[in-house]
Image (cartoon, rainbow, N blue to C red; front, side, top):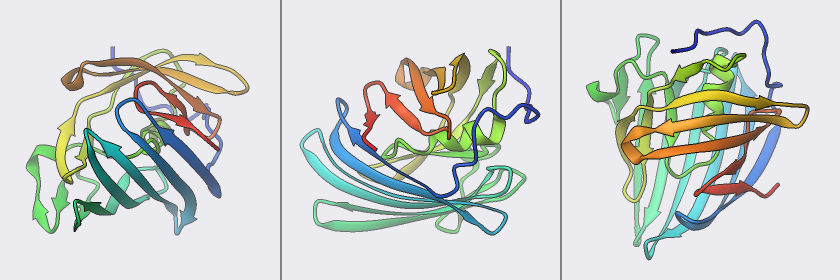
Length: 203
């Protein structure tokens, strides 16, 4: 069953003005710092992750813009790896068409959210856009930006609200392509507290 969009009972507070950090572990060893600020009628997410993974060190900086409904507008990514610096520029429209460095990327068509492999922050985009208020399963195909090197692909994933209390919420999260079936824990601003196998909140 796929959940409907229902913003009448929002469960996340507005994260404007939030700063957060994560320790990346298990899949990689690293550290991420990020912030969310209001920008126009939407929000801007800015962050940076430095890590070593499979013996390769890399750093990814990102700026992601979303509109008032938390739909992705665009992103600018910069990666430094093995002495080289690469960039990726992303734009999307309300029809769900994606442009990567100015060229159409039809494999991402109809995706609404962006999800960065290098970040523990970007899950919050889907959560604020949909504000799940039941135990329904929410399909959330995303434009997934892999790192080392930067490259886009479509990622089919689902979220199901499992628990909610005064501290935060938890979701059962699945991504069949990667065999992922875990429970994610978020605070009341929709920011990851514990992402098993990837990161844990530091501050």
